[in-house]
Image 1 (tube, one colour):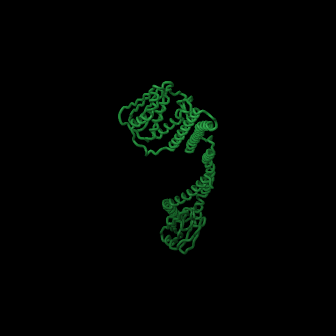
Image 2 (cartoon, one colour):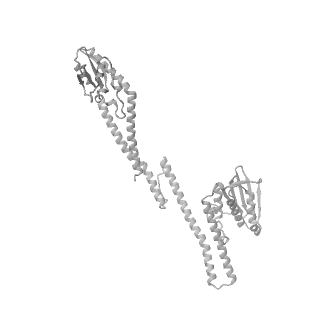
Image 3 (cartoon, rainbow, N blue to C red):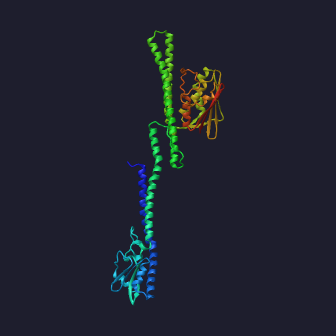
Length: 460
């Protein structure tokens, strides 16, 4: 299996090779379309200058003259009317030329071999030293016309430059490959560290350290990954705490039921004591039933509800239904309850069953923690885009220490209460989860010994 390190190196090298080939082809196209005509024109002028200088200076033999020209970086080839040829300077790689071309040059025409040289994608005519890739001009020697072919000798003119460029390109490619090898390892290392970190997280080890000082995308990824790791660690801690709490909550009533049922079976106890034991078993069974129901509710809420099930509902009507349901509890403690509103028919968008459970949890808590002859007040405030519902009581209140943990699962502020009152410590957690699913908020404020107020904010 190829690693990311090998893939990056191979990809980079392929890009460099492909870029070099493409650059050569594009440069060759540029030469054939733009530079070749200019080169042809320039060498044509030089060829005529060579011819004119000899024709106006007959003091030097033609061989010596052309040999001296070849020494300054030109290749020359002269053919007479009979086909006799003579080269000066480095010989051409291919001295073949059509006889008609020679005749036309002797008659006074110019042979533009450079401009007419055929195009090839990978072989540039700039370095092709053939007779067909020259400029042919007429030259008169002792009254006889001959054809003179002229071409710059690139190896002589640019020999050192070509070696320099060859060394430069070779070193450029070599150092590029070395830098790619080193830089790729530097780039891949943090990704490898992230991979190792994922393996640690998969194994349950959330204590990882990553380089968070980078300012690029990998640095942001490392920071996000660290945040995710921290979040997963907290989630795992909450899960373990939740499992432990559930186990504890279930174990307590089960122990009571087991103990009292065993006593009923094995001991000879009075009927009144039997009835008391049976009453305790019934209450603990009921608490287990409530606990299992609320755990199922939390599991359902944690998977979130379908927002398409939300419908407009009348807050006032729903609160009155809840008050009617708990009326017997209110009468039992002689509690007064009032409902205040600013206007009629105040509606919010939500799930009727879930919001009904929120109001039920808040009002039953208010009843539970308000002493006899106390007061409960419900107020609905209609805002522009939201609706606020205040549920206040004159109960025992909540301490500042407990306020910080009020909505935690299985947390109960009144630690002095016995477990036989069917409380599970999940009511407010369920209410908060429901309100969050409605994209609202629930908060509380309280003064110890004076009462508490819960504020629910919902969108319209």
